[in-house]
Each structure stands twice: as C-alpha cells, then as structure tokens.
Length: 524
Image 1: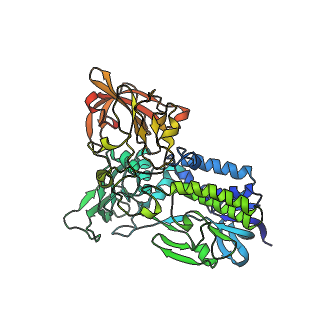
Image 2: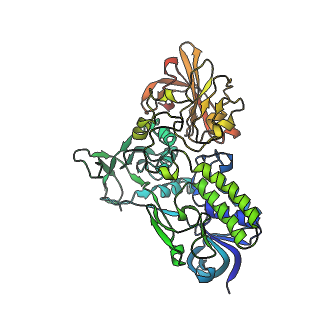
Image 3: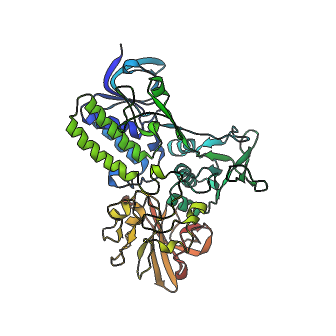
C-alpha cells in the first residue's frame, strides 16, 4: 500500500527544499525525495557568496545557505529521503521511488517537481575524450569530493557558471589557460569576469573549440575564431597544452517526469518546460513545478519560486486561507521582482545594453575582454579620489546586489532603495578602513585605497581567496585589471575575521602613481 503525504517534493535543491519548508510551516505533512547522497542540489557546490539583498541571503556562501535550508527542514518536520530516485509520476499523484534496490509507492495530495536541470554538451572532434567534463562535474569534484579536476584547464562558456567555476578552479590550484566563448560578448556578470581577468586569464570571445587531442586522455585543445554565422575563420587557430577541457554551455530543464504525468509542455529556447501559471501550477491539478525545471534562473530566484509554490499548495489543500496566501505571495513576488531587474533581467537576455540605468556608457572592454580599461573606470560613481583611506568600487553593471551598503557602518557607500543601482562612494563620509565592504562584496569589486602613505607609496587592500596566503613583508608583483604586471609590490598585512567569512584582505604597498591600476598581488 502506498504511503500518503500532503505534499511530495521531487528534488532537494534550493527550490524543492524552500517549498518543503514553506509548506511544512503551514502544517502540511511533507516528504522530499532526492536521488543524490547529499541534499541541497547545486547549493553545496557553491562556495561563492550570493548576490541580492539580505532577504535573498546575499553575501552568504551557497553551501551555508544549503545548511540553513536543511536545518529549517528538520526543524519543521520535513522528511528528506536521499538516494531515492523517483522513476515514475502517475495519475492520482502517485510516484514510484527506487530506494535500496526496491521500488516503493507513494501518493500525495499534491506534487511539486523541482528536479532542476542537466548540463548541455557540445560536439567537436575529440569531445568524448576523457578529460572533457561539464562545469557542474568540475564543481562536484572540487567542492564535494575535494578532487582536483585537472592541472591545466580550458573553460568553454562565459556565462555566470563558466566564470564562477573558472575562479573556483584557480582556488583549487588549477591553471585556467583560457576562457573561450563563441559569443562576441561575455554572458555573465562583469564583476565575475573582472576577478578572473586580473589573475591573468585571457578571454577569447568569438572563438570556439575546433578539436581536442589525446588518445586516452586530453593532452591539448585547438580553438579558432568564428564569424557572425559561427563558422571557423581559417588561419585563426590557437592551440593550448591542457589536460582538461571544461564545458559551461548552458542547462536543460529535467522535465521528463512532468511530461510523463501528462502536463502540458512548451518548447522554449532554454528547453522543454511545463506550461505553468505564475505560481508554478501545471495543467494537471495538484502538480506544480519550481526552480530550473520550470525555466533556468539563479538559485536565489529558485528559492523564492519554491516558497511561492509551497504557499500556493498550502492554500490549494486548505491549510492557508486566501487572504493570508495573497499577502505572502505579494511579499515573495516583490522579492523575486527585485532579482529580475537590471541589465540581466530575463527580458534583456542576449541584448546589448549600451547604457547603465544612470546613463553611463557600458564598458565594451569589459564585455569583450573581461576587464575595465584604465580610462573607463573613472566614469563610475564608485571610483573616487581623496586623502586618506577610502573605498573604490569597480561595480559597473546594474546587477541586483547591495551588501556593500549594509556593510558600512559609516554610510560611506550608498545604493539606495533600488538594489540594481550602481554603488556610490560618499565623499563627505570618513572611511575607517575596517574592510567590511571589501569582504562583503559578492563580486569582489571593492578595494580600499590610500593614495599616499609617504615616501612616494600608497596602499591597495583587495579580497584574496587563494592558498597559500602571502605573508607580511613578502615581495611580489601587482597585476592590473588586465592581469599584466603593473609594478613590484610588497605585502604589508593579511587579515581575516569571522565577520569576513573566509575572505582574506590583503594590503599591498605600491608606488602612489599606480594605486589606481594595481588590482591583484602575485607572489614571485
């Protein structure tokens, strides 16, 4: 006989867990199934800090958010079954689950499918060679199993996944030899690209892979430029000595169960997705979808979508009255809308945004090369000059994020009520040099600068998340925004604290004339 629950959630990722918690808080007897040995979906692979505001868990690392969700699930009595693969979704909301080499049957008064998405692959000569892996696989190896994916790696794809994983590969001790994309412009956040570029990683836009070489494992890769029709341009080939090729070329919703259940589907540029209403309800009564299975977005959005579905399901089953549901939905939709605005809003995907919301010309150098040019950076309101230590904020795109504003107790940084506004450094406020803004910036785009400390020198304080940590007095070189040598540099101090959440702050001494250019320290 099938076990019965008010709500069965398929998938213990950010959307599924958030929905389960929301439903359980409203009294629903809820169970979650996930095929993996660990819950949390992508969250436990994500060691970077989230964007958004406090309500979106901004400046908190993904795995910590995952822990918070699991704690909430446990506190609210949600049952989470792991190593449990849902293999069927049938009429009358019956699911079959493979667990411990047996098939078990469950029935739910409602079903939420939050199965996420799978990585896309691209075909090229040698694409099946061992050592060609997906970016998600690389994250799993590094951040879950603590296995180094390779030593010398080429990344294909410049969306947020490709950018974030490239940085994490470098944190794991890998050399990223190049970041390649067939598109003419970087697809992800500029702040992610900039922190890679200043480490010396070159970007090859309007390029793609021709072939991977190696008989038993990858030993090299050749790329070439493509024209506007994505055809190879003869004579533009470049070959790299690598042992791993990492692919970050998009995701496809894993909607097979929804199709099996008879839900109406629609074909979108991002893949086959269920035809849902604004609350995640499918065409089959009692079956809902949330997260990437309903359309690819960031994990922050998936968590809110999950909460919306959990709220609507509670109302559908009579656990929540209409007025209370509508009030909660308005609150959640407001939070979701704040994430879906700015340059990277869903309606702007693929578009070239030529000006910021403030009317400042978009940096084409950033979009095409991954870094701001020295002459461009001065036009942004976060870049200022003054006597004494002060923040310099090289955040140049309207992305939903405001932790820097909350981090400064002196009010040196202002974003305002619209979280996609560019940060402004207030000239009339005195900076104490505490470094909270540098540590809190999810995009690592804030530097503390003191232009003159005497003797013709100044200092630059920057975020540093690599091992081994440089030591005080260590000599090295300062790299510019383009990853090239600017000058010699000396480490004055390296500090961290619990409040910095494992973001170390490195202060280096450089010639005063170069404090506006020096943006990274490289030991020699």
